[in-house]
Length: 114
Length: 114
Image (tube, rainbow over all chains, first blue to last red; front, side):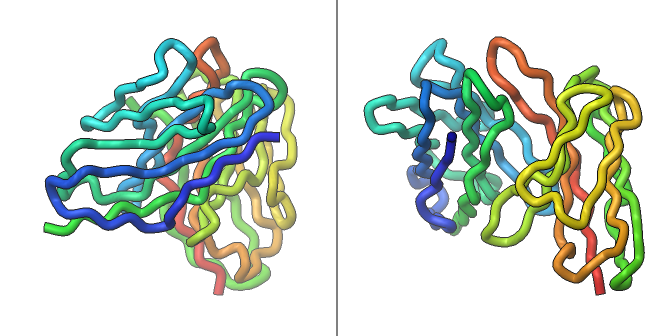
């Protein structure tokens, strides 16, 4: 069975600082991995996804994530935070075999201070 | 680009009333989903439909019913609303492919049961 853990329900950074949102997964086989972003009062939209083509995945709005099999991690980073990055971020995992339905983490709220 | 459209956006119900949340997608996706989102709980799957004509229970199906009306439409019904069903509901759709199962979400429906 697959599962995903997001460390920290809230992460607070200053504008211009590095953003690091943590995601660890457990899966019986190397999975597909996703990061979604949810802006206030909106639905979730895909930021990026890992499908095995490359371990470093670049997404929209300057975000990227690195798949590290040895650490079972898929952390999301951005070199310099903008005020507009304030949102809820969800990590999700789905197996390559068996159930294709993604399992979502509980989310991390990113707070950006001026 | 409509994507996934769900109605209504906001609804207030009295305990015991019934209502149906409507959802339609125009991306020709096979699979559709209903999630609920509660603070600190992330996204929880209520029901899903892998393809037209099939529906299956997710993590939290009690108190809900669904209908896959056709390939485009997937409705969620609350037969007798309870305060515990106060939540934000998201409809979503996807097609599983070589790059995994990317899910596309609607904008959400805010439901309050008093």
